[in-house]
Amino acid sequence: MDFSLTDEQRLFQEAVRSFCDRELKPYAAQVDETGRLRMEAIAKMPDLGLVGLQVPEAYGGADFDSISAALAMIELGRACGSTGLSIEAHNELCCLPIVRWGTDEQKARFLPRLTSGEVLGSIALTEPDAGSDLMGTQTRATRDGDEWVINGSKAWITNASLAPVIVTLTRTDPGADTHGFSMILVETDRAGLTIAPPEKKMGTRASPAHVLTFNDVRVPRENLLGQEGRGLQQTLATLDSGRIAVGALCVGLAQAALETALHYAQERRAFGQRLADHQAIQFKLADAATQLEAARLLVLRAAWSKDRGENYTKLASMAKLFASEAVERIAFEALQIHGGYGYSREFPLERIYRDQRIMSIGEGTSEINRIVIARRLLDEHAPPV
Ligand SMILES: Cc1cc2nc3c(=O)[nH]c(=O)nc-3n(C[C@H](O)[C@H](O)[C@H](O)COP(=O)(O)OP(=O)(O)OC[C@H]3O[C@@H](n4cnc5c(N)ncnc54)[C@H](O)[C@@H]3O)c2cc1C
Image (cartoon, rainbow, N blue to C red; front, top):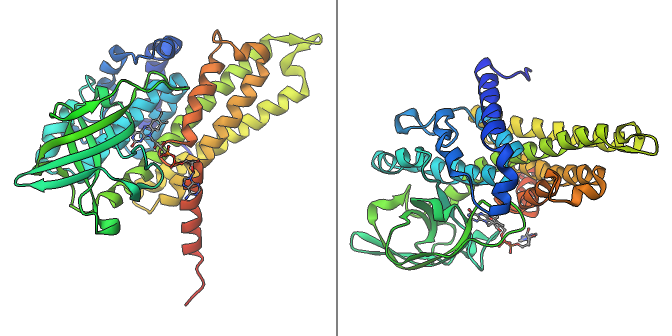
């Protein structure tokens, strides 16, 4: 067993950290306050491969392994939750499905633009009446000659207003149960597609999330992504990979919270000594560091398993579940260590605390991830028949 990073992975990690410390972290409060991503920073991301982490070089990406991709997400999460979330959705939920299931023509048409740093990609799964329960998807795509005609609505679609194309889950055969869904690539300039103003959110406030309305939106037949009828299976596979990335964002957010608390505990004094000299505070720091390390190991273990071509569904759900619940506890205690100042917008903890809250909801809630893990466990340990 070897826990060390390769030289390439370590150098990449250092380069991303230095970029994030320069281009994202100093602006994180402003980005949160204004509700706008810093697009000039995103424009510089292609130099490091951050907007094409696992896209082949031929299409402008960096073709990194999954551990490197997770390391990048950790650094982004540590610097700015809003930017981290939007870059995660872009890479994992839009670029990767196109890489995995796109035809050569679709890859050539969409990926170079998506890796340019000028735009961000998007995926539309959730609907006003169907989130966790993807089988409840109602957005309908019907064939009309050489076109798909799409009708319905989607909710909470991250990056839609910044995207040239949205990977859209549609129902193509209402009678076909789990094989009645298909992924269709919908360009955002298609007539009939309306993108509502961004939702007003508790955290990750600059990562825009929108309601979409499809009113007889027509796209060519060639915009089908992968096989007709396989959309649900493609979605579940996409979420497996995305969960590693969300877990990594959580590790980054938790690291930022712990670093801030460690600094504050050694500056602030109470009852004649530093906060850090009170054993109750030391215990909080110790618990946070332990949970952070466990989350990091689980995330990197899932990424490692993905790189080895193993089935990593259970590990990805475990990584996302554990890391998203760990960051909640770590952010809570880090804020507690700050006392009243933790509640102030003058300190980063208040933002980190709000930003982390989405992580146990998006890309499979904690409850859904527990269901995924339990199902796998029970399958693995089914009594012989
Ligand atoms: C900031 C943000 C960004 C997002 N970005 C995107 C995006 O880019 N694309 C996209 O498609 N979606 C996106 N989403 C939507 C997100 O994926 C959903 O909110 C999430 O999947 C949960 O769905 P829901 O909100 O409909 O909750 P519901 O599915 O209605 O669930 C409500 C509660 O019931 C629980 N629950 C549901 N079913 C079960 C069950 N069987 N057993 C036990 N408990 C259950 C859930 O865990 C949850 O606690 C985003 C959401 C947010 C808030």
